[in-house]
Length: 392
Image 1 (cartoon, rainbow, N blue to C red):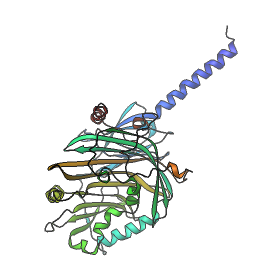
Image 2 (tube, rainbow, N blue to C red):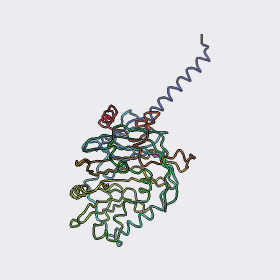
Image 3 (spheres, rainbow, N blue to C red):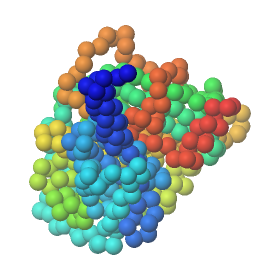
Image 4 (tube, helix red, strand yellow):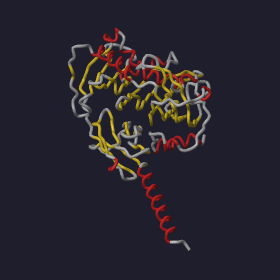
């Protein structure tokens, strides 16, 4: 027979345990981001937990699984939509729908400047380099889909710590892989350097804004039109649009640089090869295995005095002749920074990952990190593809 006092203590423990479970459950939930007018899902919305500084990204279904370390309001940001903050108290459901208002119907105004936009861009890069937080540890979820002749044949992903060292003038990265998986089959005859991104310099390229070198050259003014425009999403931001001139031939990209006009730092940067120029791109592939950047986008975030990469996307493609047959290879890469820390933790040199890609690294994982810690959950269709690849 249990005494009354002991019964009371047991009851209190049960109530405490139950309330703790509810509290934990409230920190793990799903959001689906949709267009408020069309009701359609919005892909690649940057979601930031304002108190814990955790990062998430919505997938093609507009879905993101949120797993917070503590209660926090969420900030939703996308270049084509007005930014929106949702209070934590409003996210009590297991599945929460969040609607964003498009700014596509609002016309961008061309801003006349006394300085050429290219000169403004050069100052932006110089100032951004001086402000970007280094050293820092970025915990990143990385995933890559590989296509051969438009069919997905391979997939890999992993949780990675990028230990970003050095300074604004020279960045060095040490990589520590926590967990990873590789699923599917790759052709052994394809040069491994063409498959995936070189992880040992990808962060350096992003943190040094290397992909903008093309439009910083003196002759770029004769190849591109430069404009500064208003940014409807945030009145403190402006946009530099760099577009190839119509009469200039070649594989030239359209660039978009979103920047904070007060802090004079870059908040988003990306480029894409327009469809009208893709034929030049395809013709160039026939005589070379050279890889071309088809598309990329980096999103940066500022938190007090911290300025760091929030997420990135790259798509590369090339054609390669093999046994007199032409094959088209495409790689789609996403990286989501799930957390960051200015404190660099200690590690042995033997633990540093020194290969260029995760494609040949043996699968090793301890939990379903892709659903729990990734910050970027696969869609139902993507999960089905991954399951199919696993059975081959």
